[in-house]
Amino acid sequence: MATKITILVDNTASGKLVGEHGLSSLIEKDETMILFDAGQGEAFAYNIDALGVDLAELAHIVFSHGHYDHTGGIARLAETAELAAVVHMHPAALDAKFAREPDGTAKSIGISKSNREWLLSRGDDLHLSKHPVEIAPGVLTTGEIPEIFSQESCSTRFRLDKELTQIDDMADDMSLFMRTDAGTVVVLGCCHRGLANTLAHITMIAETDEIAAVIGGTHLRNADRARLDFTVETVKKHHVKRFVATHCTGIKSAEYLKEKLPDVFTAGFAGMTMEFD
Image 1: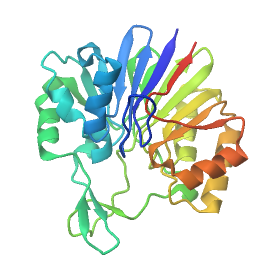
Image 2: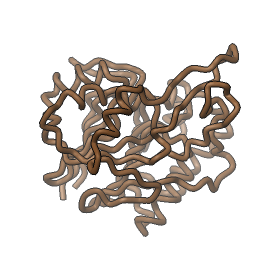
Image 3: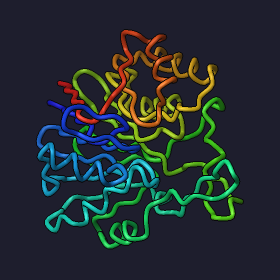
Image 4: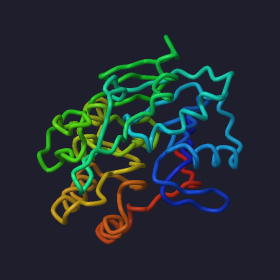
């Protein structure tokens, strides 16, 4: 069963593609095409045209969480009149979301009003679940990821109200994983709930410790040395064969991970493709 993953949007890009602070990946497993996140919007629209991606061929769309840099491309999806894909997300992804800025003000970082309205207009084609869902043969969402490891507590910068009184614990943070002959392939959005928590949850569901690859954002941009070392230990513990970090990993953190995991770690970019048998 062949699986191909193409990074459509990332902070960096190669060739004719453009980068933006955001993330989107296209997954092709056997005859099923799945979109995982949709960037901020502009790079998503440009890159899918540059790569010749036909959105009408999508069977499923999965949103890892409700932040603007993963859902902005909904505007382009909404323009595709023949789009028949089923949309999957955690119900909390639709909540209002804010970030506390350094000056103490609130910045709205959730799904835009128009994009939220389009999602709700999907009717039965919008599937909201807190639990793992097998969206295609051998392809599952993680559902809500339990917080097991205290080292990976979510940033208190994220809030649920404009007054910044309610901390957002990012319950909507989900990942996607696939069973392949090479092992489990994991696709991350921002991994707000942490890589150790995410992989522990996935290996329990998949009932295997064989992690062929981990691909996506890790939210380690501002991580200290202890957190980075914990991530290195996590990758080794799960015998991850390939670790492709993108988006919110951060340049300095990526350099450190490459130093500690030279045979496993790679920095991803828009235009990068990976194939698994």
